[in-house]
Length: 318
Image (cartoon, rainbow, N blue to C red; front, side, top):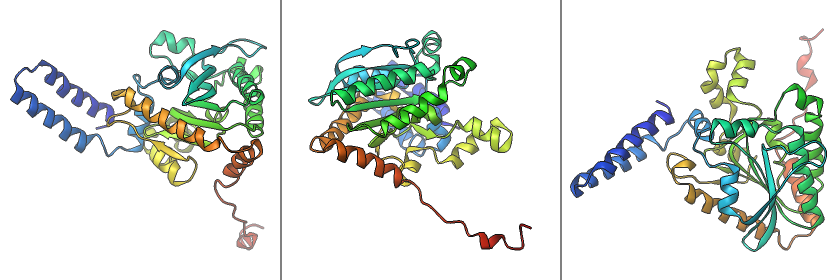
């Protein structure tokens, strides 16, 4: 039974609770609900977290912007081709700081998802993001990015307009900025589509978000030629927040309510806001040089280098 099946059972109990008016019965159901949450909804598999990261009711980038930042002003377009609705960006305030906010936007309905291309940005989306980040650098504003994408859009038109170049240019220029970049993975963090706005001085993940080179379905198709093995792939990919914290890929995990962020969004917004305010305060006294070199050191220190011993090939390769 996966987390979505368990959620249905929990919702049935909550529906039963809403129909009761007897205090004793209400108390009995409340105890059942809390017991069920404790037994069934806490020990999640990697696949459970994939399902929660993709949950149709999960808060989107716009939800986070509206509830975490004040006085947000949205800015549009890449000044070259068009305005990609898969990327939402602008200027807002948080904890006494004026920041540039950039997020990958999913829709909540089919119509909204079509409008924002299911949060798969085109190159003009990444160029819009870069335009806003350059503006932030010019005016010495910190940058906050909200990552939630299955990946950059791989269509012919996107490739013709320079998808790979747009992503590469973002990575190159983000590495040079002297303002702090804080990246928050709020849902799916898929491949280069996530990295294109994800090169942060600090990278945070919501507890049930995921961050990986590609989807579990894609991984299973490539490795085992069978996309139905996505659940097994999720376990081996080490894509959960706990896996990535252990590997020092991310800096901190932002906790979610039992059952996922969609269960109690205000609690999630407060946790994101608190995390960002604390992180922004850390960089207040740092120079642009310290901020840039700190980011550089972060990525240089990920993983390790192991020299290959060619002596092991003697007698094997002729």
